[in-house]
Image (cartoon, rainbow, N blue to C red; front, side, top):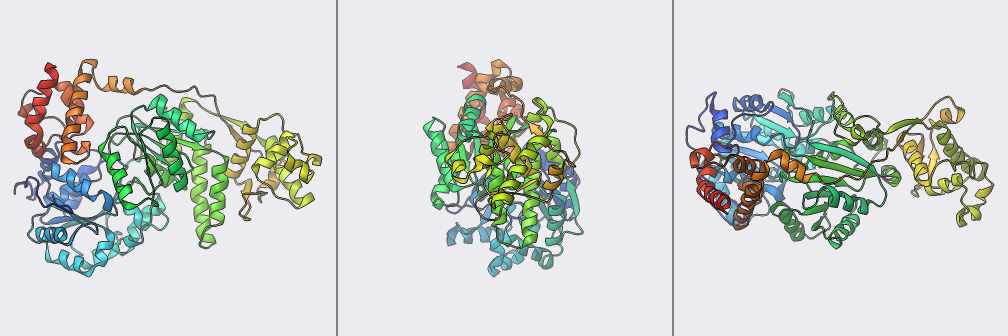
Length: 625
């Protein structure tokens, strides 16, 4: 391992592991990583890249993308160069590879000159299997010169969606990566991302000059994640209820749109006994790093963050991802929710969504920099997100369809478990639109949603009295719906393009070209009516019981405690030692020897050598307690 302050190596792989043969990738998978078989199209991707071919890989978070470049880097002569924007996580990535005996290091701006020199010497001496670089590092002439003096096994461009102008988390530094093909035309390249629409997919291929590469597109389905979108009503209290009733003691991520909201939400959770930490770009770098480190290394931490947090996070046991504000795109939503349940165990993706989200996002688009084409693109992203929120069909079907994948109803999202109704909302829509029209035509006035609803409900507020709106013909004609239901009507008309947010910057509402057909009666309006959903209770014990026999549970918890102590002593996340899935298998099978332990999934040679006897001792001690 090479880090900013130390220089040491994990177990050196034997020469036969690094030799080229048709069996080599499967052998490396078993001996180094401790797995018996590849998942999905991993084997095909790895064989292709190991043979020198270029590849563009679209695979969901938790689908095993890393192995698609790590194993070819071990099979091919030289060092695998991984281009990654995740500077804050490079040490953890190196630690995880070092734990299985892979000789890994990184070069980035956090290192001292001595640490960088040590890494450079190791690379030139052929002592590195994998070297991580930030994309901006390639702007430094000395870095390219260094790479040319060594032997490069492959280039892996991780988080490749960062190259796409309209993709999630755009990074300008990624645009220069086409130079890899120009400067090293014989070195294979593999670009990987967890999410991409057909348009983003095409843009990645074009910008990285991967037109001749083989494209591998895995299913985007994450069946272990339950997608739920709830009407927003006191979102902090709703979040607290979610955590207390369904995820007590679980690790989770809460996304908020603003830094202020992040701070307030974290403080709210802490005040209510939930261990929570804030993360946003406005915090001092040491605070962000410390909070991220605690989240990765401790159990039961809830991270409250802006979207600045999360990309590349490998923590496998995040049990829920919650959004308190509407994401700007389906791609962003998919990536963020994909950070839950990387271990394949049940997880929750929960979003609180309301009228103000739609108004705020529309206003932000109106006020955004850029030309009309840019704003149209932002609007298209938002429209797709709103369609997902407002659908009466299966959420998973809608989500997968966005990425061009067909599926059947999942039976596990909120719309499958408690189907909403689609009702004829033409008359309520006409009443609301008529109010907007009358205010504009008769009085040359524009107002926001709250005032429009007050008029329809016939409320005598100071503002209505001030403007004389009690005399409007639509005053009081909407008492058949509650205030909350009217706000739902406004929200859905905005989502359907039958209402728009005015560009005056005050969030006032105006009709659109589509409104006339509704007002004339030539177009009907379908609205979603939310079903009554009973409060859910925690299913953690049920999930655990499904995975483990009751007799194995105490042993599993003892092994987790042993792992936590090892991780704390080494200063690494617990999952770097062993994943929960591995500990569950050990607790169930109770191996009695190193040979038996070596057959457990996730126990490769390096981990068996390093932890095997200590784990067996812990197993014996716990079983005899």
